[in-house]
Image (cartoon, rainbow, N blue to C red; front, side):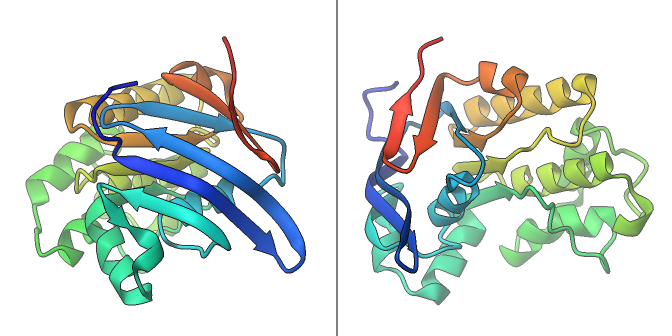
Length: 223
């Protein structure tokens, strides 16, 4: 990992649901241009961890810093504004807006930032293999196509922090490899930090570091 100041720093993070501890003692640093994959048993809180890193979920102890900014000190409004500019999130459930076309869904992060750019939207759709489907609505797409819309939307505004929850789960092996190429390229080209949760061994193999999340924290896996 680079010796420069990490883009993402997590210190002693704790998340509980009521009296049940989901995870604790989570410590993590990710540098600009670095790709980290996280694996772990079902129900251990991998998706919850990503939601915390994006400021979408709350936590019960510890600290999250991104680019030197402390999410712990932000209120909900500040986190929302920060997330728009700094985070690209590929959700496992896509969260594509049904009343917007493919192109409009992908353009949404740029529009929210006042940076509408049809050319960049077109380039991103081509990169994920959806050129020609710009005008379609989500209900006219397959699960794999919806996943690619979500990936294009997460990347289009070139955020410094990329978070991906099973981004290749609905894709055939060839398309999955293409999407991983795109994620890795975006990470390196724009100096982003990529944190990816996956059960797919092919996706995990692309990471610079492979980590396991458990209730007791994060450990590095040797390969």
